[in-house]
Length: 350
Image (tube, rainbow, N blue to C red):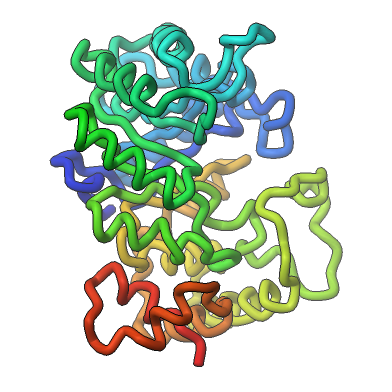
């Protein structure tokens, strides 16, 4: 297992992380899995044996039950693993039971610590943008949690480019704790993150944790052109994330993915994850699994290094035209580009 620094911090995390949305798996999370404490212990043991040192959860996963199961399953092994969780979603029916106010962040952190059975959260992430709370209030509350020792690092998730840059600017201006990472959706199925979020990572030194790097199972090789969704899969059970806007491009990409997997005698899952891990700025891909076999397969991606030619084949199959203003910037760069600019220009379709 390879370890990479989380952004500009000294913290090193495994390139594959364990996702826990399927722990408990109730309510809206039920299509992801129904993993109990014993199942969680098995998955954690498999992850540790493979060298994984980061586990990701959120308070809204099964209304806190995912955190509870994670805490129980870790037990005395808590200090052997890094725990990342998130705050923002509604955890009650009251007007202050969600969002990113100081009131909710502090209370939610205390609740997560209790459910996890720990005295600190290694990475506390904002689960989304809150446009109704002053950003300085949110960042100040996170800073206080870090200074108190209850949180070690902070991050964002599902922010747009301007959200992220505004937060980084505000942290620098006011001297509050800066985001170490952003957790985003990024896969061969949709490379939207390459327009803004990946260049920001390269320019600002913010690590990338990738959620759903297999596009909700679309990139596992189970979904093929002209075939119904496999029974028991997320799509079969009505899961809609990520949305599919271009089926032809998706299946063209899957065809290449499966071909490369066959040529290498590895799984399509491992090739899809290896492609994401090969991309600039990516720190770790978060994988969850309904079964131990699925988890073992996904973790094997850490040992798959794609060639430049294989990456180029996948890039070409999954490519989308650059939106404005990036196509114009690519056409007029005149060699005056930095590394972040080049990450965009390299995608330019002539």
